[in-house]
Amino acid sequence: MPGLEDLYREIILDHYKSPRNRGTLEPPAVRAEGHNPLCGDEIEVFLDVQDGVISDIKISGQGCSISQSSASMMSAAVKGKPVEQVRALIQRFKHMMSIEDETSEPDTSTPLGDLEALQGVVKFPVRIKCAVLAWNTLAEGLELASA
Amino acid sequence: MTLNFSSLRADFPVLAEHINGKPLVYLDSANSSQKPNAVIDAMTSFLQHSYAPTNRSAYTLAAHATDLYEGARSKVASFINAPHAHEVVFTKNATEALNLVVRTWGSANLSAGDVIVLTHMEHHANIVPWQMLAAERGCEIRWVPLTSDGLLDLSNIDVLLSGASVFSFTAMSNVLGTINPVKELCALAHKHGAIAVVDGCQSVPHMMTDVQDFDADFLAFSSHKMVGPSGIGILWGRESLLEEIPPFLGGGNMIADVKLDGFTCAELPGKFEAGTQPITEAVGLGAAVDYLSAIGMNNIREHERDLAQYALHALTSRFGRDIVIHGSNDINQRGATFSFAFKDVHPHDVSQVLDQHNVCVRAGHHCAKPLMRLLGANATVRASFYLYNTTSEVDALCDALEDAGDFFTL
Image 1 (tube, rainbow over the protein chains, first blue to last red):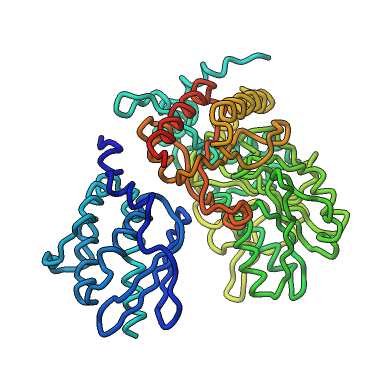
Image 2 (cartoon, each protein chain N blue to C red; image 1 turned 30 degrees about the vertical axis):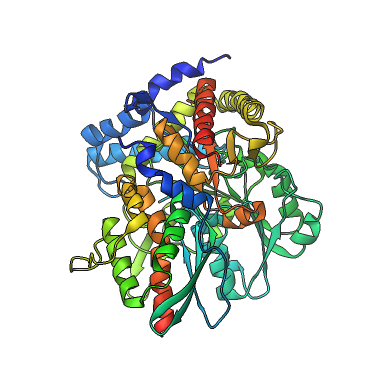
């Protein structure tokens, strides 16, 4: 049986205790909302997309350490990145979470960095949806921004 | 009569399971209970020796299966002191039982402007079906508020019930553990000309139920929370109401006759049991009723009162201000179901650490989001106890919580 240390890596707890990019953005920044209807976790992702680049991102909402730290790490990883690169990162992250919703192999040119720490979540299948919540919400935000 | 409740544990084979060398501490019975050998054996034996379709075929095997199926109905009727066995309707689950009331009695009786009264502590199953009908018909829904210690606030109840057609409420909260004064609430409903619908999911497994003493009109509850199998729920209804309301699902078994220009309904309870029923599950439910009855519902309530007392004391003395237990601390007004916040640790993370200790609790909103909003929580941890739980399992919960606190100390 995997132990707690497989799930709660130090970097995850660090992001949970000191979340990055907390807050909100005013329009014209877009706002996407994600829910985990089973557990009640809620997240809001605010995106300012300028010239195809995520110039700013803010996260609000509440949830468990996994959903919160995943959101925090995500915000740090995508801020200042071109949208196309971020889309690839979303795909790569979901692939790491064993969610194969794309047919092709993910583009590995974008480094996962700290996000690698979330790899252990796969050993706790119940928690995968916690880790992915922010990413699905980000994807929705990108759709809104490009609409 | 004094019963040794810890010896009952041997009746529940799953409680002897170990995961990673640690014993199972099952504290999720408000969600679904474990099953004793008496239930497992009754269902296995029925499938091995007696299974046949019920209420249809004339051969001996089918007649015997029908006797067992209808026998389960009679057992359930006695268990809740129903005047007639044919007032007991088997459904898929308690949720379907409540939907049945809304879609039959509600459809026949509610129209624009009519008032439905619910409470702020209801499970979604006693909210959403009413909201669906209210939206279709233009009905008004009123909510009975709660006191700060998680009891129903009845100070304004006469105003809320004024002109109401139905008062539908839980007998015991699945989140707070609050035991509501069902008899008093039924009387209040009737005083205002409303019918009383009781959600007994959390109360029927844990204490004596007497629908005649309650003077209720409908009572819905589930088998799987009272040591019976999942896949079958129960609706009891007052005979006169069941007679006058329209049928629920249409199909086989629920008809007296079908012609090209229409149909007539079967007698009770067939009128509400379209299609092949959960036959084996009914047999298991009958065995569950026998099992609980042999122990005695008052004995079970006493055992759980002792457990609740022990748990309240253990949790508060060990964790003090680090734990916030929602609901009343008066064990005469609550059952052994505890929802709580622990330090600043998210309920999911608490339950993850508890799982390492094989302590099974539920973390989430417990299908009661309006209540959770009132509590100001997105989620809570819930530990719920039943007849097979012991004080040493309360200690195991506390030890595991200690670990969770240490792990997540910010």
